[in-house]
Image 1 (cartoon, rainbow, N blue to C red):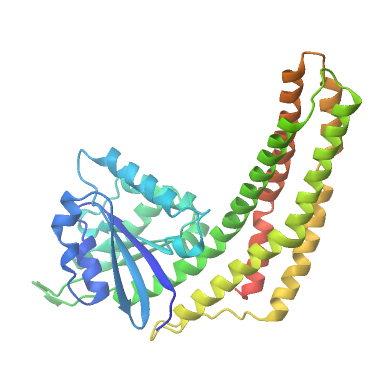
Image 2: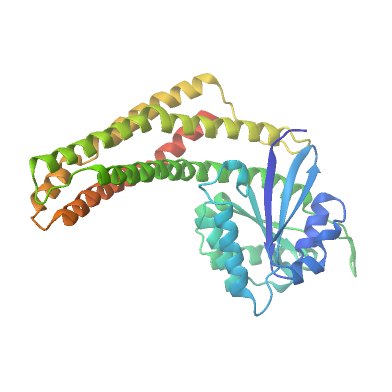
Length: 373
């Protein structure tokens, strides 16, 4: 057994079969997942289990009830924030399952809204059509297309972001004969695949959010230093010197990002992915493609980071910004001058953050190459 915990969120309306699915996946009845929790409780209810040597923490969500959709949406917003991209990878939802009862043969606007909300957060979802034994294979295919249409996914996005799996959790006696449970192995496999896709999409945003937070802290410190400075009214030689010092400190911060912060964040992310992927691909009977991580990949990654940051630094327009603010300075008093310098700091940090965010696709490619995906 490994020490990586795979977090799986299960959502759906009350009566959609969330609890039955949870029991089916775990191959045992979890008393806590009964109707009492799903109907009367509000929040997420974690259940830690071990499936084929892999530790999994299922989060069973409060079922969506008529008349309480606004409250349920607030719950999901809070959950997304609590497990947001800025948190460590271990705290994320690694896979998200959304249950829709197949018998209804319709996806409602609320379902589509919740699913779209998670897609915007770079999650890859598994939509489970519960009680799928009630529909013919042709009807199931038609229903799948209806779901894609409602979520407004193009054909190229379907396999990438959402997997729809029909499922039956119990043996059912039908006129044509008995129906055996089905869908478990495919759902468990989807948990792993969606985990891999989710982390590749979310890690660049995780890294950029952490670096942007560092930049915000730097900007706050620069503005705090102004309290100890003698700000003169008008654009005197002393004030010009302050601008230049701030600019120099900004370049030092970029150098720190280049040499320490970004390489460290990428290496930490790669090591975390390596550990989690090793855990998941070694789960019995759930083999997926392994990542071929090695030291050569990381060295290549470090070279790519250096080249990436060099392009990034060259694209920052510091001096035009400096000239613009100096020429705009007027004699409006000491506080007004201080405000102009603080604005300069905010503009400078804003430029750096915009550039960092613009690098997310490049960081994604670096992560993929380092992991061998």
